[in-house]
Image (cartoon, rainbow, N blue to C red; front, side, top):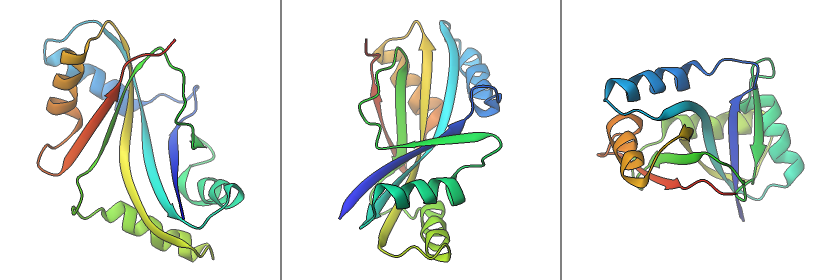
Length: 155
């Protein structure tokens, strides 16, 4: 049994309108110093799957080949940006995750136990932990049903 982490995000040449909207919302909060926000949908897939099968799921189900790309199991990313991941708390229904399990089965892929979903955000600019917590709690998550974690820039 393995837990796979798949991140689906816009190609560099495609505008990230969700990220641009969040950047405007950050400014509306009176927070300055954030230069850009990029977003991704994250899928945590648990099951007896190999890398080729995860690649097929990403290609055929999760990513739009025109506007998006995906990576999987890239936990050791080295980024100059702050990252925030938001996911549902344990016990909260994840309708998108449940639909993704059905979609994977419809592809003819067996061995998937569960899929959990969440969002990932890369923020660049002059930030600190307090600002990141404020942005996450005010704009990126619902504290009743979601949790978040963040990482400071590396490198």
